[in-house]
Image 1 (cartoon, rainbow over the protein chains, first blue to last red):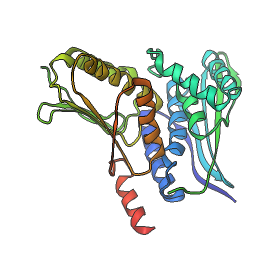
Image 2 (image 1 turned 90 degrees about the vertical axis):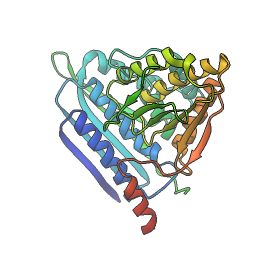
Image 3 (image 1 turned 90 degrees about the horizontal axis):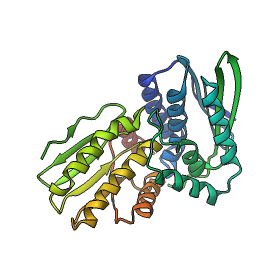
Image 4 (image 1 turned 30 degrees about the horizontal axis):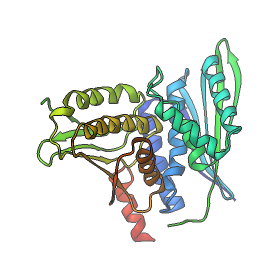
Length: 164
Length: 141
C-alpha cells in the first residue's frame, strides 16, 4: 500500500522550510507512532530541506514524504548552479561507495574539520543521513537552462518494527 | 562579564548564561539556514568569558531537533568547554533527551567520543512544535 503523507510543491523560503519541518514532525508522530528512531526519520527531511534552501537558485521546491510498503521515501527537488549540482552528485557517489565504517570515519573527519562552508553549512548532511537510516541516497540532476540544473534527491529508509 | 541572553526563534534556540545556578543553557530547535552566522557570536562570548565563568558552571543542552551543521556548532562549543576543564574548571555538561530517543543518545555518544568529556544524559519531555501532540499521542495509544 502506498501511503502519501505529505506532498508540497511551491514557493520556498525560511518560513516554509520551518513549517514543513514542524509538519513532518507531527505527521511522523501521528502516522508512525512514538518510536525510538522517529527523529532519525524526521532528520532525513530536515537535512534535505536544509540543502534545498542553502543551494536553491530558484524560488520553488518540490518536497514529498510518503510511505511505500515498509519504506519511508523522502524526495526533494530544487534548482541549483551547475557547480553545486556537480558537488551534490560527487558527494552522493562517494558516499554510495562507502561501507558503514567508512561513512562513520568520513563523518568524524568532517566534524573535526573546524570550518563551515561559505553558506554556513558543515558538509555533514548527506553523511548524517547515510549514518542514520542507511546508504540509500539517490540523486538525479539535469540541465534546465544556462547554468541552472534541476536536482532531485531521494532517500528511502526502511521502517523497521517499532522498538518503543 | 557581558550578559548572554538570546531569545529563541522558530529556527534557532534560546541561549542564556545565568550566574545563579550557574548555568549556560541552549534550548529549542536549532535549524538555522546559516549555522555559522548564528553560533559565531555565542562562540565568541564563550571564548571571551571562559576564564571568568564559575568553576562549577553547568552547560545544558535541550534541543528537540537540530540539523547536522548545528551538531558541528555544538561540538565546537563543547571544545571550548573542554578547554576550560583543561585549565582547571569543574564544568559539567548535561544533554537532555526524550526517553529512548536513539538520535539524541547517539549525538551524545558522538560528542563524548570526539571531545573525551563526560556528558550526563537527563531524560524528560522536550518542548517542540509537536510536543503537546506527543503527549496526546501517548494518551491515545
